[in-house]
Image: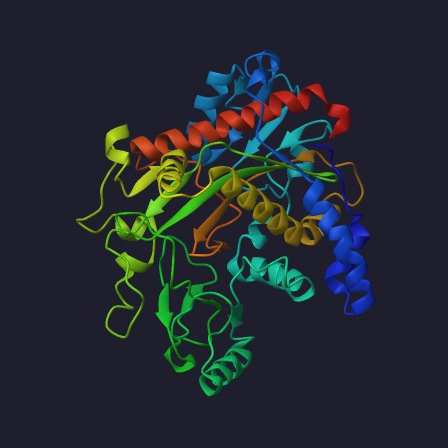
Length: 418
Protein backbone atom coordinates (compact mmCIF):
# COMPACT_ATOMS: atom_id res chain seq x y z
CA UNK A 1 0.00 0.00 0.00
CA UNK A 2 1.53 3.39 -0.94
CA UNK A 3 2.40 5.95 1.72
CA UNK A 4 1.36 9.57 1.61
CA UNK A 5 1.44 12.54 3.93
CA UNK A 6 0.19 16.05 4.56
CA UNK A 7 2.98 18.53 5.22
CA UNK A 8 3.73 19.61 8.78
CA UNK A 9 2.33 23.10 8.17
CA UNK A 10 -0.90 21.76 6.70
CA UNK A 11 -1.48 19.32 9.57
CA UNK A 12 -1.13 22.13 12.11
CA UNK A 13 -3.23 24.49 9.97
CA UNK A 14 -6.04 21.93 9.89
CA UNK A 15 -6.44 22.23 13.66
CA UNK A 16 -5.97 26.01 13.72
CA UNK A 17 -8.35 26.73 10.84
CA UNK A 18 -11.72 28.25 11.62
CA UNK A 19 -12.57 29.18 8.04
CA UNK A 20 -15.23 26.97 6.45
CA UNK A 21 -13.62 27.04 3.00
CA UNK A 22 -10.26 26.09 4.48
CA UNK A 23 -11.89 23.23 6.38
CA UNK A 24 -13.50 21.90 3.20
CA UNK A 25 -10.17 22.09 1.41
CA UNK A 26 -8.38 20.18 4.14
CA UNK A 27 -11.18 17.62 4.43
CA UNK A 28 -10.18 16.20 1.05
CA UNK A 29 -6.54 16.01 2.17
CA UNK A 30 -7.57 14.35 5.42
CA UNK A 31 -9.54 11.70 3.53
CA UNK A 32 -6.55 11.14 1.25
CA UNK A 33 -4.24 10.68 4.23
CA UNK A 34 -6.65 8.33 5.99
CA UNK A 35 -7.25 6.22 2.91
CA UNK A 36 -3.63 5.99 1.80
CA UNK A 37 -1.66 5.91 5.05
CA UNK A 38 0.56 2.86 5.20
CA UNK A 39 -1.07 0.79 7.94
CA UNK A 40 -0.51 -2.93 7.78
CA UNK A 41 0.61 -6.05 9.60
CA UNK A 42 4.36 -6.85 9.80
CA UNK A 43 5.54 -9.51 7.39
CA UNK A 44 6.73 -12.74 9.04
CA UNK A 45 9.08 -13.48 6.14
CA UNK A 46 11.55 -10.96 7.54
CA UNK A 47 11.93 -12.84 10.81
CA UNK A 48 15.39 -14.33 11.49
CA UNK A 49 16.81 -12.98 8.21
CA UNK A 50 18.05 -9.42 8.55
CA UNK A 51 17.74 -9.62 12.35
CA UNK A 52 20.90 -11.70 12.80
CA UNK A 53 23.23 -8.67 12.89
CA UNK A 54 20.67 -6.30 14.37
CA UNK A 55 21.73 -4.72 17.68
CA UNK A 56 19.62 -3.35 20.52
CA UNK A 57 20.63 -1.43 23.65
CA UNK A 58 18.32 -2.25 26.59
CA UNK A 59 20.35 -0.58 29.34
CA UNK A 60 17.55 1.93 29.98
CA UNK A 61 14.58 -0.37 29.33
CA UNK A 62 13.85 -0.84 33.07
CA UNK A 63 10.46 -2.59 33.49
CA UNK A 64 10.31 -3.28 29.74
CA UNK A 65 13.64 -5.10 29.83
CA UNK A 66 12.44 -8.64 30.54
CA UNK A 67 9.98 -8.87 27.67
CA UNK A 68 12.28 -6.99 25.27
CA UNK A 69 15.16 -9.35 26.12
CA UNK A 70 12.99 -12.43 25.58
CA UNK A 71 11.86 -11.22 22.18
CA UNK A 72 15.32 -10.00 21.18
CA UNK A 73 16.70 -13.48 21.81
CA UNK A 74 13.83 -15.11 19.94
CA UNK A 75 14.34 -12.85 16.94
CA UNK A 76 18.11 -13.24 16.91
CA UNK A 77 18.89 -9.64 17.85
CA UNK A 78 22.24 -8.96 19.52
CA UNK A 79 21.37 -7.36 22.87
CA UNK A 80 23.55 -5.03 24.91
CA UNK A 81 21.85 -5.04 28.34
CA UNK A 82 24.48 -2.73 29.85
CA UNK A 83 25.18 -0.68 26.74
CA UNK A 84 28.19 -0.99 24.45
CA UNK A 85 31.49 -0.75 26.30
CA UNK A 86 33.37 -0.25 23.03
CA UNK A 87 31.54 3.00 22.39
CA UNK A 88 29.90 1.63 19.25
CA UNK A 89 26.37 2.45 18.23
CA UNK A 90 23.33 0.14 18.25
CA UNK A 91 20.55 -0.05 15.72
CA UNK A 92 17.81 0.34 18.37
CA UNK A 93 17.83 2.00 21.79
CA UNK A 94 14.96 0.80 23.95
CA UNK A 95 14.08 3.22 26.75
CA UNK A 96 11.38 3.00 29.40
CA UNK A 97 11.05 6.79 29.31
CA UNK A 98 12.40 9.43 26.97
CA UNK A 99 15.71 10.57 28.46
CA UNK A 100 16.41 14.29 28.85
CA UNK A 101 19.99 13.70 27.71
CA UNK A 102 18.95 11.65 24.69
CA UNK A 103 21.03 13.80 22.35
CA UNK A 104 24.22 12.77 24.13
CA UNK A 105 23.14 9.12 24.24
CA UNK A 106 22.15 8.71 20.59
CA UNK A 107 24.40 10.68 18.26
CA UNK A 108 23.85 8.85 14.99
CA UNK A 109 20.69 9.86 13.08
CA UNK A 110 20.47 6.35 11.61
CA UNK A 111 19.80 4.91 15.08
CA UNK A 112 16.26 4.27 16.21
CA UNK A 113 14.64 4.87 19.58
CA UNK A 114 11.30 3.51 20.78
CA UNK A 115 9.92 6.88 21.92
CA UNK A 116 8.82 10.14 20.37
CA UNK A 117 9.61 13.24 22.46
CA UNK A 118 6.58 14.58 24.32
CA UNK A 119 4.55 11.37 24.19
CA UNK A 120 4.38 11.22 27.98
CA UNK A 121 2.38 14.46 27.94
CA UNK A 122 0.12 13.18 25.17
CA UNK A 123 -0.60 10.10 27.25
CA UNK A 124 -2.54 12.27 29.68
CA UNK A 125 -6.29 11.95 29.10
CA UNK A 126 -6.93 15.68 28.81
CA UNK A 127 -4.03 16.31 26.39
CA UNK A 128 -5.15 13.58 24.02
CA UNK A 129 -8.79 14.65 24.35
CA UNK A 130 -7.82 18.18 23.31
CA UNK A 131 -6.09 16.83 20.21
CA UNK A 132 -8.97 14.57 19.19
CA UNK A 133 -11.63 17.17 20.03
CA UNK A 134 -9.88 19.71 17.80
CA UNK A 135 -10.14 17.31 14.88
CA UNK A 136 -13.69 16.35 15.78
CA UNK A 137 -14.74 19.99 15.77
CA UNK A 138 -13.41 20.38 12.23
CA UNK A 139 -14.36 16.93 10.93
CA UNK A 140 -17.35 15.75 13.00
CA UNK A 141 -18.26 12.95 10.60
CA UNK A 142 -14.75 11.50 10.73
CA UNK A 143 -14.43 11.42 14.52
CA UNK A 144 -17.79 9.97 15.56
CA UNK A 145 -15.88 7.12 17.25
CA UNK A 146 -14.89 9.42 20.11
CA UNK A 147 -17.47 10.22 22.81
CA UNK A 148 -18.31 13.83 23.64
CA UNK A 149 -15.86 14.96 26.30
CA UNK A 150 -15.24 17.82 28.70
CA UNK A 151 -12.15 18.44 30.80
CA UNK A 152 -12.67 20.17 34.09
CA UNK A 153 -12.33 22.57 35.75
CA UNK A 154 -11.72 24.47 32.46
CA UNK A 155 -14.89 23.20 30.74
CA UNK A 156 -17.13 22.73 33.76
CA UNK A 157 -19.46 25.56 32.69
CA UNK A 158 -19.75 24.05 29.21
CA UNK A 159 -20.63 20.67 30.71
CA UNK A 160 -23.29 22.23 32.96
CA UNK A 161 -24.76 24.06 29.96
CA UNK A 162 -24.81 20.80 27.98
CA UNK A 163 -26.59 18.93 30.78
CA UNK A 164 -29.17 21.69 31.19
CA UNK A 165 -29.87 21.63 27.46
CA UNK A 166 -30.35 17.84 27.49
CA UNK A 167 -32.64 18.08 30.53
CA UNK A 168 -34.86 20.69 28.87
CA UNK A 169 -35.09 18.95 25.51
CA UNK A 170 -35.34 15.43 26.89
CA UNK A 171 -32.87 14.29 24.24
CA UNK A 172 -29.83 12.06 24.57
CA UNK A 173 -26.47 13.81 24.55
CA UNK A 174 -25.30 12.47 21.15
CA UNK A 175 -25.87 9.66 18.69
CA UNK A 176 -24.51 7.07 21.15
CA UNK A 177 -27.02 4.90 22.97
CA UNK A 178 -26.52 6.85 26.20
CA UNK A 179 -29.61 5.97 28.23
CA UNK A 180 -30.61 8.76 30.63
CA UNK A 181 -27.39 10.61 29.78
CA UNK A 182 -24.88 8.85 32.00
CA UNK A 183 -21.30 10.13 32.06
CA UNK A 184 -18.03 8.61 33.18
CA UNK A 185 -15.47 10.71 35.07
CA UNK A 186 -11.76 9.85 34.92
CA UNK A 187 -8.86 11.57 36.74
CA UNK A 188 -6.42 13.09 34.25
CA UNK A 189 -3.39 11.36 35.75
CA UNK A 190 -5.24 8.30 37.07
CA UNK A 191 -4.35 4.72 36.22
CA UNK A 192 -5.63 1.19 36.79
CA UNK A 193 -9.21 2.34 37.26
CA UNK A 194 -8.45 4.45 40.32
CA UNK A 195 -10.85 7.33 40.85
CA UNK A 196 -13.24 6.49 37.99
CA UNK A 197 -16.98 6.86 38.64
CA UNK A 198 -20.32 7.43 36.88
CA UNK A 199 -22.57 10.48 37.18
CA UNK A 200 -25.77 11.87 35.70
CA UNK A 201 -25.61 15.45 36.90
CA UNK A 202 -22.83 18.07 37.24
CA UNK A 203 -23.43 18.37 40.98
CA UNK A 204 -22.35 14.74 41.37
CA UNK A 205 -18.78 15.55 40.28
CA UNK A 206 -16.29 14.86 43.06
CA UNK A 207 -13.62 17.50 43.62
CA UNK A 208 -14.58 19.63 40.59
CA UNK A 209 -11.50 21.79 41.14
CA UNK A 210 -9.17 18.91 40.17
CA UNK A 211 -8.22 17.94 36.61
CA UNK A 212 -10.69 15.31 35.40
CA UNK A 213 -12.08 14.12 32.09
CA UNK A 214 -15.85 13.70 31.68
CA UNK A 215 -17.14 11.59 28.80
CA UNK A 216 -20.55 10.36 27.83
CA UNK A 217 -20.85 6.76 28.94
CA UNK A 218 -21.45 4.03 26.36
CA UNK A 219 -24.46 2.53 28.09
CA UNK A 220 -25.31 -0.06 25.44
CA UNK A 221 -22.07 -2.00 24.84
CA UNK A 222 -21.74 -5.04 22.61
CA UNK A 223 -21.82 -8.19 24.77
CA UNK A 224 -21.00 -11.85 24.22
CA UNK A 225 -23.01 -14.77 25.61
CA UNK A 226 -21.61 -14.28 29.12
CA UNK A 227 -23.18 -10.78 29.25
CA UNK A 228 -19.91 -9.26 30.51
CA UNK A 229 -18.75 -5.88 29.30
CA UNK A 230 -15.31 -5.97 27.66
CA UNK A 231 -12.85 -3.79 25.80
CA UNK A 232 -10.34 -4.57 23.07
CA UNK A 233 -6.66 -3.71 23.45
CA UNK A 234 -5.08 -3.16 20.05
CA UNK A 235 -1.32 -2.69 19.82
CA UNK A 236 0.31 -0.70 17.03
CA UNK A 237 3.67 0.79 16.15
CA UNK A 238 4.04 4.26 14.71
CA UNK A 239 6.95 3.56 12.38
CA UNK A 240 7.26 7.10 11.04
CA UNK A 241 5.27 10.31 10.88
CA UNK A 242 6.52 11.63 7.54
CA UNK A 243 5.26 9.69 5.70
CA UNK A 244 2.74 8.38 8.20
CA UNK A 245 3.36 4.65 8.51
CA UNK A 246 1.78 2.40 11.15
CA UNK A 247 2.02 -1.32 11.86
CA UNK A 248 -0.68 -3.19 13.75
CA UNK A 249 0.07 -6.26 15.88
CA UNK A 250 -1.83 -9.36 14.84
CA UNK A 251 -2.53 -10.27 18.46
CA UNK A 252 -3.99 -8.18 21.22
CA UNK A 253 -6.03 -8.60 24.35
CA UNK A 254 -9.56 -8.21 25.65
CA UNK A 255 -10.36 -7.39 29.27
CA UNK A 256 -13.68 -8.44 30.75
CA UNK A 257 -15.68 -7.22 33.70
CA UNK A 258 -16.33 -9.76 36.43
CA UNK A 259 -20.04 -9.13 36.94
CA UNK A 260 -22.80 -9.15 34.34
CA UNK A 261 -23.59 -5.86 32.70
CA UNK A 262 -26.80 -3.92 33.23
CA UNK A 263 -27.67 -0.45 31.96
CA UNK A 264 -26.66 2.01 34.71
CA UNK A 265 -29.36 3.08 37.14
CA UNK A 266 -29.37 4.86 40.48
CA UNK A 267 -29.12 1.46 42.18
CA UNK A 268 -26.26 -0.13 40.19
CA UNK A 269 -24.12 2.71 38.81
CA UNK A 270 -21.54 2.22 41.56
CA UNK A 271 -21.02 -1.48 40.78
CA UNK A 272 -17.69 -0.92 39.05
CA UNK A 273 -17.14 -4.66 38.55
CA UNK A 274 -19.89 -4.47 35.93
CA UNK A 275 -18.91 -1.15 34.33
CA UNK A 276 -15.09 -0.97 34.33
CA UNK A 277 -12.84 -3.50 32.62
CA UNK A 278 -9.64 -2.51 34.45
CA UNK A 279 -7.58 -5.51 35.55
CA UNK A 280 -6.37 -3.86 38.76
CA UNK A 281 -9.98 -3.43 39.85
CA UNK A 282 -11.50 -6.72 38.71
CA UNK A 283 -8.71 -8.96 40.00
CA UNK A 284 -9.94 -8.17 43.52
CA UNK A 285 -13.31 -9.76 42.74
CA UNK A 286 -13.70 -13.45 43.61
CA UNK A 287 -15.40 -13.91 40.24
CA UNK A 288 -12.19 -13.05 38.37
CA UNK A 289 -11.14 -15.97 36.14
CA UNK A 290 -7.40 -16.41 35.59
CA UNK A 291 -6.53 -17.96 32.24
CA UNK A 292 -4.01 -20.71 32.93
CA UNK A 293 -4.59 -22.53 29.65
CA UNK A 294 -6.13 -22.03 26.22
CA UNK A 295 -9.32 -23.70 27.44
CA UNK A 296 -9.49 -21.40 30.48
CA UNK A 297 -9.02 -18.23 28.48
CA UNK A 298 -12.14 -18.91 26.41
CA UNK A 299 -14.07 -17.82 29.50
CA UNK A 300 -11.28 -15.91 31.22
CA UNK A 301 -11.37 -12.34 32.46
CA UNK A 302 -8.48 -11.70 30.08
CA UNK A 303 -8.59 -13.25 26.62
CA UNK A 304 -6.47 -13.12 23.52
CA UNK A 305 -7.86 -10.84 20.84
CA UNK A 306 -7.93 -13.75 18.39
CA UNK A 307 -10.14 -15.72 20.79
CA UNK A 308 -12.61 -12.86 21.20
CA UNK A 309 -12.70 -12.23 17.46
CA UNK A 310 -13.57 -15.90 16.98
CA UNK A 311 -16.35 -15.57 19.56
CA UNK A 312 -17.63 -12.43 17.84
CA UNK A 313 -17.54 -14.14 14.44
CA UNK A 314 -19.71 -16.92 15.86
CA UNK A 315 -22.29 -14.23 16.63
CA UNK A 316 -22.24 -12.82 13.10
CA UNK A 317 -19.58 -10.10 13.37
CA UNK A 318 -17.40 -9.92 10.25
CA UNK A 319 -13.76 -9.96 11.32
CA UNK A 320 -12.42 -8.41 8.13
CA UNK A 321 -14.71 -5.40 8.49
CA UNK A 322 -13.87 -5.17 12.19
CA UNK A 323 -10.14 -5.01 11.42
CA UNK A 324 -10.82 -2.36 8.77
CA UNK A 325 -12.73 -0.22 11.27
CA UNK A 326 -9.99 -0.67 13.88
CA UNK A 327 -7.28 0.44 11.47
CA UNK A 328 -9.24 3.54 10.45
CA UNK A 329 -9.67 4.54 14.11
CA UNK A 330 -5.93 4.05 14.73
CA UNK A 331 -5.02 6.24 11.75
CA UNK A 332 -7.45 9.00 12.75
CA UNK A 333 -6.24 8.93 16.36
CA UNK A 334 -2.59 9.21 15.32
CA UNK A 335 -3.45 12.00 12.85
CA UNK A 336 -4.96 13.96 15.76
CA UNK A 337 -1.70 13.48 17.69
CA UNK A 338 0.61 14.43 14.81
CA UNK A 339 0.86 18.22 15.39
CA UNK A 340 2.06 17.73 18.97
CA UNK A 341 4.41 14.89 17.97
CA UNK A 342 5.97 16.96 15.18
CA UNK A 343 6.34 20.14 17.24
CA UNK A 344 7.87 18.26 20.17
CA UNK A 345 10.35 16.49 17.90
CA UNK A 346 11.40 19.72 16.21
CA UNK A 347 11.75 21.43 19.60
CA UNK A 348 13.84 18.57 21.00
CA UNK A 349 16.19 18.35 18.02
CA UNK A 350 15.97 21.94 16.80
CA UNK A 351 19.68 22.29 15.94
CA UNK A 352 20.62 18.78 14.89
CA UNK A 353 19.45 15.75 12.93
CA UNK A 354 17.61 13.62 15.46
CA UNK A 355 17.32 9.83 15.62
CA UNK A 356 14.58 7.88 13.88
CA UNK A 357 11.81 7.50 16.44
CA UNK A 358 9.06 4.92 16.58
CA UNK A 359 6.46 4.26 19.25
CA UNK A 360 4.46 1.30 20.47
CA UNK A 361 0.95 2.46 21.33
CA UNK A 362 -2.11 0.78 22.78
CA UNK A 363 -5.57 1.60 21.45
CA UNK A 364 -8.41 0.64 23.84
CA UNK A 365 -11.74 0.17 22.08
CA UNK A 366 -15.27 -0.56 23.24
CA UNK A 367 -17.90 -1.72 20.77
CA UNK A 368 -21.46 -0.58 21.25
CA UNK A 369 -24.39 -2.03 19.33
CA UNK A 370 -23.57 0.18 16.33
CA UNK A 371 -19.88 1.06 16.09
CA UNK A 372 -16.44 0.94 17.69
CA UNK A 373 -15.68 3.63 20.25
CA UNK A 374 -12.26 4.82 21.40
CA UNK A 375 -12.16 4.17 25.14
CA UNK A 376 -9.59 6.76 26.13
CA UNK A 377 -7.84 5.35 29.16
CA UNK A 378 -4.18 4.87 28.27
CA UNK A 379 -3.68 5.14 24.55
CA UNK A 380 0.00 5.96 24.36
CA UNK A 381 1.90 3.79 26.82
CA UNK A 382 1.17 0.06 26.92
CA UNK A 383 2.44 -2.03 29.82
CA UNK A 384 5.34 -4.10 28.49
CA UNK A 385 6.30 -5.75 31.77
CA UNK A 386 5.78 -9.40 32.60
CA UNK A 387 3.99 -9.04 35.92
CA UNK A 388 0.78 -10.88 36.86
CA UNK A 389 1.13 -13.26 33.94
CA UNK A 390 -1.61 -15.54 32.74
CA UNK A 391 -1.74 -17.58 29.56
CA UNK A 392 -3.46 -14.72 27.74
CA UNK A 393 -1.38 -11.72 28.68
CA UNK A 394 1.96 -13.53 28.63
CA UNK A 395 1.43 -14.39 24.97
CA UNK A 396 0.11 -10.97 23.99
CA UNK A 397 3.21 -8.80 24.71
CA UNK A 398 5.51 -11.44 23.23
CA UNK A 399 3.51 -11.62 20.01
CA UNK A 400 3.37 -7.82 19.88
CA UNK A 401 7.11 -7.49 20.42
CA UNK A 402 7.78 -10.23 17.87
CA UNK A 403 5.87 -8.13 15.36
CA UNK A 404 7.96 -5.12 16.42
CA UNK A 405 11.11 -7.12 15.75
CA UNK A 406 9.90 -8.03 12.29
CA UNK A 407 9.17 -4.35 11.67
CA UNK A 408 12.68 -3.47 12.82
CA UNK A 409 14.29 -6.05 10.57
CA UNK A 410 12.30 -4.85 7.60
CA UNK A 411 13.11 -1.24 8.38
CA UNK A 412 16.82 -1.93 8.30
CA UNK A 413 16.43 -3.15 4.71
CA UNK A 414 15.00 0.23 3.71
CA UNK A 415 16.86 2.82 5.77
CA UNK A 416 16.67 5.31 2.93
CA UNK A 417 12.88 5.13 2.92
CA UNK A 418 12.44 5.92 6.62
